[in-house]
Amino acid sequence: MEIIACPECDLLQRLPELPPGGKARCARCGATVASRSTDPFDRPLALTIAALIALVVANTAPLMSLSAVGRSASTTIVGGVIDMWLQGEQITAVIVAFCAVIAPASYVLFMLTVLLAMRRPPAPHWVAELLRWADSMRPWSMNEVMMLGILVALIKIAELATVDAGVGMYAVGALVILFPAIMVSFDPDEIWQRVEWADGSLPPFARGGK
Ligand SMILES: [Zn+2]
Image (tube, rainbow, N blue to C red; front, side, top):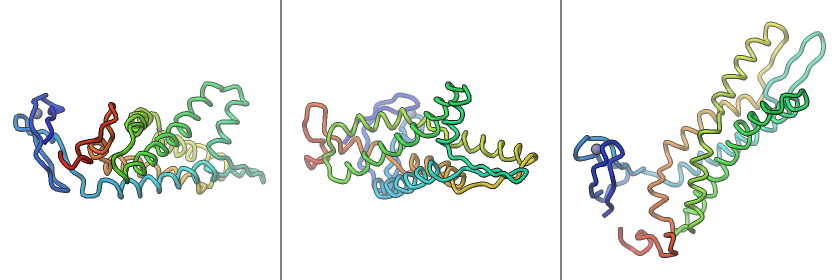
C-alpha cells in the first residue's frame, strides 16, 4: 500500500492495489491519481527500439533533394548543421544540432537503457538518474518543430526548384509519432517501484510486498 498526493489538490491518500489497465481517482477532486498500464515494459521498449531505428535513418538518409537547372543537391540533418556552421550561423547550428540530434538521441538512449535495465528487477540505482535525464531531454527534442520547418521549406523551395522528399523526412515524421507514443505507453511509477533505494536497500516490490 502506497501513500500518494493528488497532483491536482494535494490530498494525501492510500493507493489500493490496481489491476493491469486500472485507474485510481482522487477521493476529493476526481482527478486520475494513478493508472496501471496493461503492458508497462514491452510496449514502450518496442516503441523505443522503433524510435532508435527511425532516428538513425533520419540522421543518415537525405532529408530532401533539390534539383534546378540541371544540378541537384541533397542533405541530411547533420549536413545542414555543418553547412550552417560554415556559413557563419554558429549559434543556430548549435541549437539545431542540440534540438534535432543530441536531445532526441539522448532521450532514446536513456529510455532504452532504463527499459532494458528494468527487465531484471531490482534495477540499479543509476536507473533513477537516467530516468531524470530522459525527462529533462524530452522537452528539448523538437522533432515536430523540425518537421514543420522542413514542410515549410519544401513548399517555399518548390516554387524555385524541384524538391523531392527524402527517406530521412519520412523517418522524422515517424519520430514525431513515436515520441508521444513512448510517453503515453511508459509509466514511470512502474519503474520507480523496481528501482533500488538510495541507501542500497531493495525496493518493496523485490522484497515481496508493496
Ligand atoms: Zn484531488
